[in-house]
Every structure is written in structure tokens, then in C-alpha cells.
Image (cartoon, rainbow, N blue to C red; front, side, top):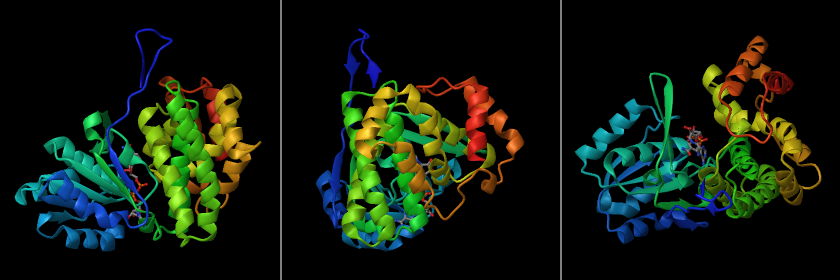
Length: 351
Ligand code: NAD
């Protein structure tokens, strides 16, 4: 998304992707590959998706060139090198990823090096399958690139694959998706399209998530939650994220903290911080979440059985100011310009 040469003109660009969504969609992957005309598939899967990956492998039959079952978080280049060697040995010319963002990131990394078309079958709500973004790590340093060619051309959402998510992962992963939608609402490059998608995503997640937490094996709720997360993923792809994502990145990088749990912890605090500076986002959140969106999100975060405070993650209180200084030194676009005192106070409240 960008501004046109005339500042009053918005430019909205949509990535080309074919999306299949619904119970049983996973069983159509082999037919979709046949449709692509691709014959030799590298199947990347996380162990959590082993059973479904086995079904896809069986359905692919002779189109299956090789499997790679060890993706890792944050796409380490050493893991990608191993997957590349497997793909080359098997002469693969297409990559299918089934699993969370780690599996999908690895497929993006393989595709970036080979030009192979990708099919993503997400089993969490992280949203990577919708984005043209790849973050890779080498020697502890993460670099991120953005290129439309990195986005999978086909995405297969099957809510049945999400039934196995434990409730902790369900909650934190859905809060991660919710954060994409909320930040899209106050993004400087928000458009009518992203506003509409983000509002619908927030309403969908807040509606479906409590139902799914109460009844994790209920397929209709799982389906609604996955649909809302899809929209949130589009928001992540099309807008620039703000203070919430910056804090998640800076804190996560500095103290090696779990990404989705951080999102869960941060979101209500950052909403309370930003919303007085973001009246249009506030109005949309009121429509989607009722009169007190901060309380609605905080209430969901409190259902987390894992750590809900920075202190519980062993973040030293005396280093919060340093985090705030790093944020303020090169801030992501945010409706409320962050200053060191205010961000330290925000972090202290989370501590
Ligand atoms: P993940 O893929 O690492 O999965 C987390 C854990 O959940 C793993 O142990 C996995 O095996 C398990 N799991 C996944 N699906 C499951 C299911 N249905 N049932 C039971 N267990 C399941 O984590 P994630 O949160 O999905 O993704 C995080 C990764 O994705 C990070 O590396 C992050 O940087 C990346 N990411 C990238 C983008 C992007 O746009 N490039 C966007 C979001 C996330």
C-alpha cells in the first residue's frame, strides 16, 4: 500500500492468491496440485500436523517428491539449507507447507531461493500464509524482506486442522491475529478495504474465541475463528504495524520471549495507550467490540493459563526503560507518538 503521486489518492494493491476454506479443504490439496500442473512436491510439515501431512502425502501419490518434517521458529537459514538439499535431491518443483508460521516460513524461504510455487495449509492463526514477508535468522540476527513473490499463491484453510490446538495455543495465536487487525485499524496506510477487513476480523475473533475456548472441539466456532484470522492475515499483509508489533519484536528479541504469548500480554495495554489518539479506529472497535474494547481484549487475555505479566517471563524491571529507548529511537508508525517515559510506564504496567 502506498500514497499516489497526489497525496489525496490511495493506492490499494491486492496479492493474487487462490484461497480454499472450509472443513475438508485439506483433502483437496492433491487435486489443486494437479490443477497447477506441478508434479514433484516437497511437503514441509510440523510434527503437530503429521497425520494430515500423511493424508496429503498419500493423496499426492507419485507427485510427492520428498518430505521435510523439521521446520523451526523464525526460519533459521541452516534449516532452510537442509530443506533445500532435500528438495534438490528429489528434484522438487513445488512446495506445500502444512503447520504453523514456522512451516509456512520455511516454504517461503525455499520458494525465495528456487522460484517454486507454494501452497500453504495453516494450522494456527498466525497469518504468515497471507503475507509477502519472510523473516529469517542467522547467528541470532533476524532479517526481514518483503516481496510479492514471497506470498503463497494458494492457501488452504481447513478448520478441522485447528481442532488439535491446545487451548493455550488457541488463545495466544488468536490474540496474535487480533493484534494484526487492531493495528491495521490505526495504520497510516489503512484503506477502506483494510478497515472493512479489520473491523470484521475483530468482531469475528471476539465472537468466536470465547466459544472455542469453552468448546475447543466445536467445528463451527473453529471455522468462524479461522475465517476471522484469515481476514486479520490480509490486514497484516496490507498495512504497516505499529507500537504493539514493535514492542513484541523488541521485547521478544531482547529477552527471547514467546511471540504469541507476548501478543496476548501486550494488546490491551497498547490499545489503552493508543485509542485516545486514534478516534476512527476507536469508533470501528466500538462497532466490533462494544463500548469498552480494551476491557473485552483484557478479559480474553486473562483467560490465559500461562504467564500474563512480563515479570513472570523473567524480564528484569530495570531494563524496561532501555526497551522504551530502543522503541523511541526508531518508532514504527503509531497514532500516539511514543516517548520514553510513557512507553516505560506502559511496560511497567505489564510488568
Ligand atoms: P509455530 O509454527 O512455531 O507453531 C507453534 C507450535 O504449535 C509448534 O510447536 C507447532 O508444532 C504447534 N502447532 C501448530 N499448529 C498446531 C495445531 N493445529 N495443533 C497442535 N499444535 C500445533 O508458531 P506460529 O505462531 O504459527 O508461527 C510463528 C512463526 O511464524 C514465527 O517464526 C513467526 O516469525 C512467523 N510469522 C511470520 C509472519 C510473516 O508474515 N512472515 C507472520 C506471522 C508469523
